[in-house]
Image (tube, rainbow, N blue to C red):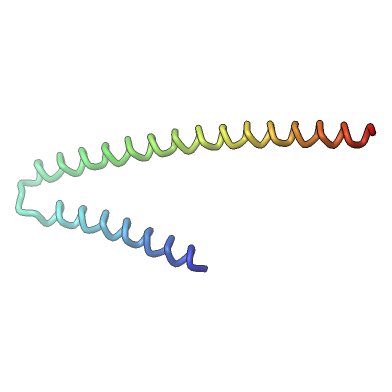
Length: 85
């Protein structure tokens, strides 16, 4: 239950930070073209970070799947050895 509260707090903190950043950029005293350029750059950076995190998650899932298969094979072999005796 404490983990849910931590997750909710973290999510809220991150979302609040993003909204604050966007609000600050939108309402800052800059020309529209400059603000749009900043927002575009920030969007590109967030997209790149999301892609990096997705790639990392995919790699970890593949590693975990391979490890699970290895453990299952080992357990199956041990079970077969014991059942033969």
